[in-house]
Length: 292
Image 1 (cartoon, rainbow, N blue to C red):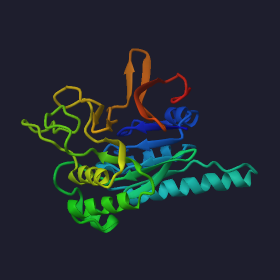
Image 2: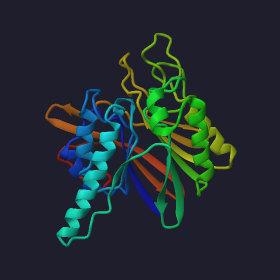
Image 3: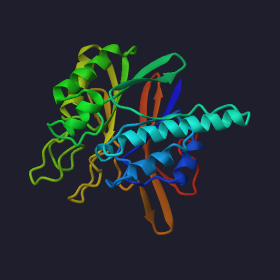
Image 4: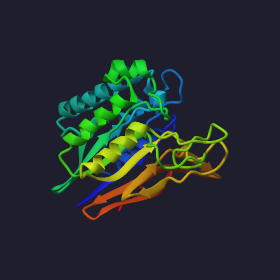
């Protein structure tokens, strides 16, 4: 059994039809987006949702802290476009595409195949990191979450309900516990003394899952850009207690070098023997990502 996942870090508007074509031709079974679709301006996340809706792959989108203002319109746009694609295919006598692009958060999703069950748990959306609950009024209205403690309880419920022993967590911001230095995986690079800016509820959910006998294969997030404000490089991958931690937020993810343009994502391959992870830079005119 081989299940291929493409992990696309914080977009910040760096996504276009070239990406759509490349990923539509890819061998990935699932695409994961870590959030911050837009650039923080009104409507930019919605424009990115319109572009993402042209994907023909199954995709889960974790909303970031930049995506709160347009979140209702963003969800409606993805649902509307998916329905229109299915309707157009049926009217043309074609078999409808099975790919769907969905927002996620406080939700569980079966992944894997051929009898190898893995549950992906989508953690707290819109996190800005640190010890406090980000956007408390929005979180209360949208999710019924009024504190970091209630967020942890919701995640623990998802862990208890997961039908599989093996889990993968998807979040916008990563968990606390990966270091206090400004260039640690989710270290604070906007304060002189640094500090661990990871999410307490996510770390608590991971610990809770392990205590319940679950195997946490990977924790996937973004938010804290890999190139820090001090112009240093964070690690994009770390391993702790048998769990792979991935920070996919290479910003900007589309970069030019001379006449060449490369597009970044992380490739994750899931088999019965475990997972492999690779950082990938796809040339603009190169092969489809995840090929082979």
